[in-house]
Length: 116
Image 1: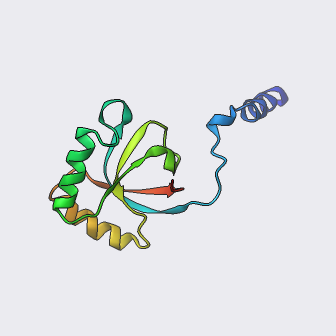
Image 2 (image 1 turned 120 degrees about the vertical axis):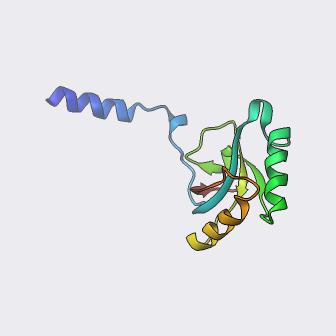
């Protein structure tokens, strides 16, 4: 039992530094996410992000395109198309209902945004 506990502690302590997010601060809150894309062929400025961006704008949602590196807990190399953080869940839910007419797969996700 003592060896099993030591192995668990050793595995935790020897985690690579890149796996731990050492940033402090940031703003947490609900976001309306219309799309998460990989940067390889559809990322920031790519055709797919533009299509989702324009569709959400048609429904009156002021979305932006963000690299995932600006958020805590997301893997690098993704592009997020969405808007947030909202101060209230009800405001995010209201915008979600509105944008789903143009982007049916939109959803709400709580994110920690560190900015640029």
